[in-house]
Length: 87
Length: 198
Image 1: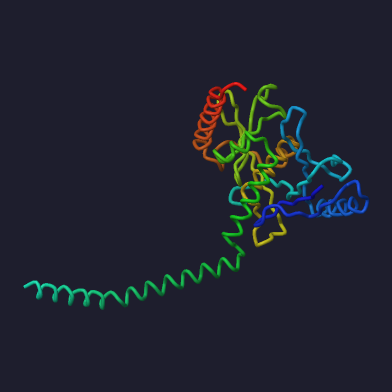
Image 2 (image 1 turned 120 degrees about the vertical axis):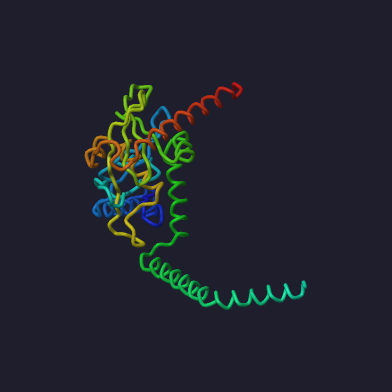
């Protein structure tokens, strides 16, 4: 599993990478996951329905991430924009 | 006679050059100053066009890996994504849809009539401002909107500032985009029909 973060001026960066079945690596993934949530990020897991349609799922804890997910994408939380701001 | 004319032309050229030289020098100096000023501003703001281009390329690759192939082709060809509203697709009775533009409000509309419903103004500012900007690359902004909409439409819409159509996105532009989208979809259907059955 890879934890990615969308970043201005860069695109995505890899925050952590590991196998959730290996306890030590899972612990590192959980720590990196918590750090991003504490920093106010939203976390989404790209998924695919049984019909093959691609969607995403927002998760609020590492326990909600499907064990077979290959990546979690962090991005800044949504804020209502206003005219003339950074929209 | 030709010699005299040639000499006169040469003298004239030299005179014009001598008259114009101070002005040209001044213009060149001003152009150099302006270029240095631009470079200085770019260095101070951290803006680097090459880095931004590479960031956008990465963002496009990530977006492509997350959305359906059709959706990716729509974005690649038209510059926006359509997402069906109501957590369903049109076949399951979605009565409205959204257009996602990079760094512009999400526009809700009725696919049956093309009527524009609302603009949902939403941004994903990164307050850590790496490289001096809080703005995600265009395709990352589209991806963030797409993930938030498909995962939790109600939540995203609640976070957004809602306005009537035309507040920030020109309604004429959206109508033109809807026509482009209809044409794009017709073309794809036509292409699929003309393919030999497997």
